[in-house]
Length: 221
Image (cartoon, rainbow, N blue to C red; front, side, top):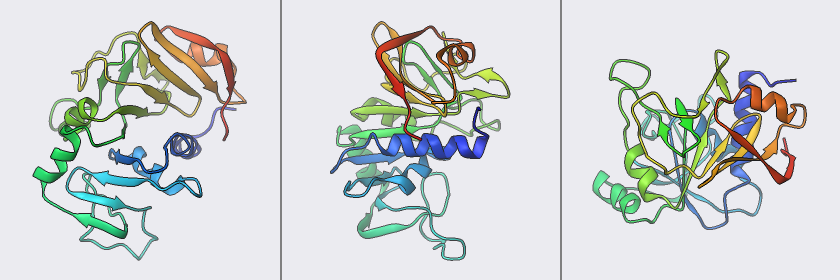
């Protein structure tokens, strides 16, 4: 059974959280990526950064306990953990452009088999602009795309992006509710699949060419 959208977001966030390593500095994009902070495994200490000037971002606050002064780059209310700090945009983007961010996790409108990313379009439409995404994908050591596998039945993982690119050949990994996919020089490699969804079903919902790893295994969900 293919998960519904809310189940899908939880699956994606949990799976990406399991990919993060102890001691990493990680940037979370707006929307779906912010859920990753809720699922960090016990014993793993990750520092989350928001490009509007914050490190030490914690899980989403409980309803009614939001601090309206603490928001991420997307204007969402977030928590901050003990030892967290606030600073100006110059310092924030010095961290990003200086290569100090271990991983960035971004949503997307489209991603393709060459590792290209399109997660913004014309102002006034779905997203008003690219924000710090262009800096993040070129400055972070690992770029993970968090996305639903399809949108209204249309594949989001394409042979070639059709929208304006945020980044060219920068994506390292794609995580959907159905699959974990590595981006390699020769193309996209399916590493894990949802246990209730076959490889052929995943391929039918993916426009891009998809190679299957010889070590393919079910996702832990």
